[in-house]
Length: 350
Image (tube, rainbow, N blue to C red; front, side):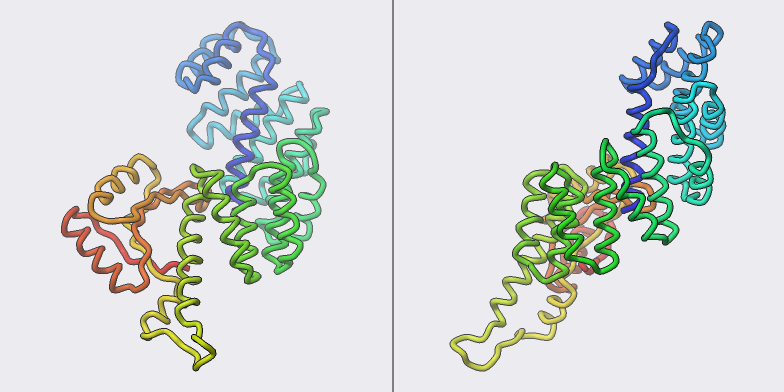
């Protein structure tokens, strides 16, 4: 989940920096407008063409924007380093923080912290909060949860406040302090809509054994945020918890007689393992996942595309069905392979 925070904050950093740009030359103004319209190729051309007419400050801002348009890691790093040496304190701080974000995304947490120990100030509270937030993320990745929690706690205003509170709740949950985590997630949910907080809150309720509240939160998540990354996982949780409830009723003793039980060992195993699903691949491009799911929808029921964040990247996995037994899932997998030619695997749900 830490890399999830990084992706969010890198996006926030870019948007904040663009909003702060005060373009002095015509070329920089045009490039900024093209950047806002996601026309990166033309924006880069405009910046390169107009650098001769720019004053020192505008040139530094152009370097900062060019760094965001650069697709080569080493080239972008060099441009951010150049911007961080600007005489304009705001541009220097912005360049250094963007460089921190790059180091963090690349897994260089020590390198990111080394940059943060140098002076990062622009007179902006938001820049200070962003520096604290990334420092806390790095300390958490390096295993110093106590220091991370303390630094997250210092970020109480601005765009990073909610993500800091979410991270602190995650640290409490990870440390087994579920009562504190639930209180923090509940507070986040009341202060503003957040699908991540809602999913984590439901997970905490599930962990402490309050399945009713867990189901309520998962259903709220799916209803309120149907397009979020967490909605697909919420749907899966709803299916599993609903199945468990139904099975619990099936094994309940009737009329005070002898205790009932699962009718077969297979059913008992399915309950313990929470069932199975079929996975037909994991794709870095959502369009490819949708193409595969479109073929499968004509053959199987419950076909879905689940988007998850893993190692700093978003993957889109194609899955189908919820099965009580591996045999039932394997039967549908064989049928799908025969009719579509697509390979897959039966996956236990946990």
